[in-house]
Image (cartoon, rainbow, N blue to C red; front, side):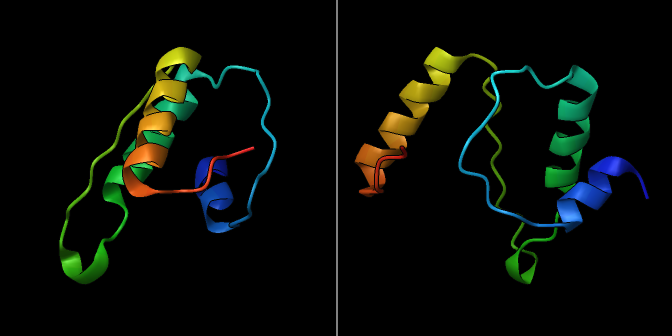
Length: 74
């Protein structure tokens, strides 16, 4: 079992993040794992948005918070 798979299986919540960029090959592995993850009753309704820059990520987060009435992250 590779390191990515092991980490995906050991779930934990994270509240603080590093500014260190994630290597491209790690991102590719995580994205592939997400695509292959099972869905409820095999509905296969999966959408992935990969944002690699802080500004668009913040804009997307603000839109999601406003649209769905979610609490603002710290």
